Amino acid sequence: MTGATLLCLVAGAALVVQNALMGAMVARGTGLTGALVFNSLVGLSLLGLVEVWRNGAAFPLRLAERAEPWFLLPGLLGTLVVAASLYGYRQQGATVTVALVVAGQLAAGIAGDAMGLTGRKGGLGLETWIGAALLLAGGVLILRGRGAA
Image (tube, rainbow, N blue to C red):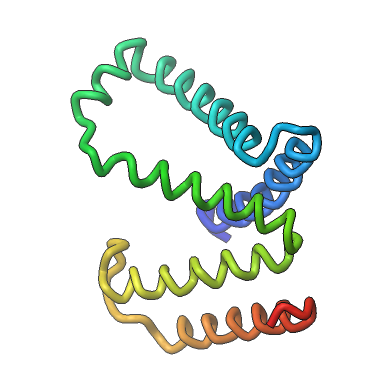
């Protein structure tokens, strides 16, 4: 198992824990947006401290010099993912939410790889399509088991 594979598996598990904790924050009265703000502030603070340690206190100026308007999109998309996951967990539970998020990621990932948008070279092999079909079938079974499909 490669380091990237292990990191992705740990990140997937961390998302479940993150959303469960954020759901508990919402239940304590922060509201969905409040939980997202806490989440973002902690992440931003941690990353800011890491960058100050690595590059010195002037890093925000260097970052601002290189910034372009489209640099806002990843943050907006990341916030959408976290917000949708948190909302999904509260409305339909972790299993259905994860199945739907993974299905969306898989479809976009296949399209991105096929179009060369991700830096991947070459076509998609039979194993990719079989794996995608199995993941899709698993998602359908999960949804049907929950009465959602």
